[in-house]
Each structure stands twice: as structure tokens, then as C-alpha cells.
Image (cartoon, rainbow, N blue to C red; front, side):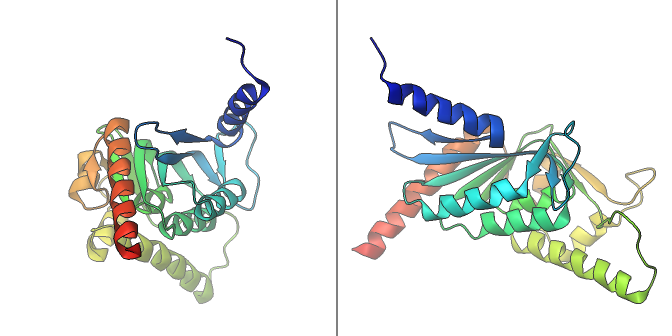
Length: 237
């Protein structure tokens, strides 16, 4: 059977989205749900361009895409795949706030790792999963470059830390006191402070909702979409 030009165009658009941004739209013919897939991998790139040899997630690509998702009435849910070493704090928080403020349901799945500023990204979704072998590294804020050793600098550090702590505790069930304990732990890492949580430990601490892989993450997102649609229907009628 001969395929028309639009069929090839659709495939090319998908390939381009995956290659350039690690994104695509998944359509389920049984439920008619349209799910946008967003992958956050490598290092979160902020205002400065990182080396071309590094795998990066560019926030100037992700933010407009999230705005388009919110504005597009055909998108029913967002699935976020995370495997990041962390990166720019401001960029990571900006993406996290955007995800948390979406009106459609979202599910995050931590694969490999969700370290540093990856922690707010993982908890920003409506519901979160982590695979058994994935890790989450929690540590205090670090800044690159020359820091002037005056009170204002330390106050600035504390304000950034408070923003991250407030976001994480506001979007998960971990207590602030416990989160700070994990950040300041001196027993886990030889040359640093902080904690590394593996799989079920992240669930036990209240950062992540469940242990699970892609099958459970997709199934949960479909459930949340159905629940949202029923609520909208009841409000309408």
C-alpha cells in the first residue's frame, strides 16, 4: 500500500522531536489519551552553554514546550523520564515550577539517577516513580566561580537553599527537618556532605510515591487522566 506524503511528514516530525529535544507525543488508540513524553537527561543547562561533548537538557527548549503543552487542549497528560546528574539551580527550579503548575496530570519516572537539582524535578509531577536501581543524591547548594566571603554571600546561599527545600517539601511527603538531615549527612560521602538514596529508600523517605518502571508509570498516568476527565465532566454538568 502506497503511503502519502503526510505519513512520512508525521514520522519525520517525531524523529526530529526525539533527536533534538528528547520529546514526542504518544497517542493511545484505545483510550484516545494523548501523552506528551519529556526526557530530562544529562546535565541541566542554564544561562551558560555547556560543552558539546556533554548530554544536556536545555531549559530554553523545555520551558516553551511546557507552555505549549498547557495551551494545547489536545494534550491529556505529561510523562517525564529523568536521568540527570543535576546542573543549574535556577534552570532546574524553573522547569520544576512549570511542571508543578500544569493543569493536566503528570507522572515522573526516575531512571538511573535524579541528583541534586534533579530532586525537585522528580517531585514536581502529580505522581512519581523510581526504578529499584535508580539513585537520588541530596546535598546542599553549590555555586561555581568566585564567591566573596561576606555575610551577603552566605545569605544568598541560604535563600537558594530555602527555595529548594521549600519546593521539595511542598511537593512530597518528606519533612523539612529530615530533608535537611539528609543534606548535611557526613557519613555517606567521603569528601562531601549529603546522602544517596537508592530506589526504595527514596520511597521510604517520602520523596517518591512508588517503586515502579515504565509500565506502572504509564498505567498510573492513564488513571490520572481518566480521573481528571471525570472531574471536569461532573463540574460541567
